[in-house]
Length: 176
Image (cartoon, rainbow, N blue to C red):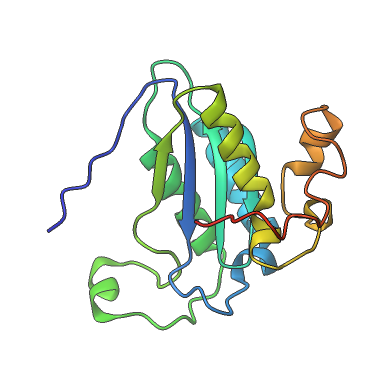
């Protein structure tokens, strides 16, 4: 069994990637975006965190969030977000016996990817990655055209120009 090592840093800022179990051709997250937003909102009330950057794609999401001082429990937040979203959906997905035995839905991958942000350069690189993702996945030509992103809020705050990543990024390699 793998021995996962997590960096538990109270008050830390983290980058996350969270995937649906079935990724290819699955648009569950964008189709039920209001349910996902509600689940995040409910969890933020009980377990606060700051959202610096967030993008929801059809089958996965990326975000940069900051935990409160003295709090490093990002795992509970993700567990509750996933549960809240899953409970709002009809139970019609296929499930493997191992998931049925554990009482799990067949919606989310069990784990997630996290990265503790080290410094301002790392923060900026991950914020850019979050916001460029819809272009990287050929969902839109311009970042500004993707509706399920904090990009629009960050433009209003002056963090990005409105034409940032406006379609001339073909020469840049954005690998996951």
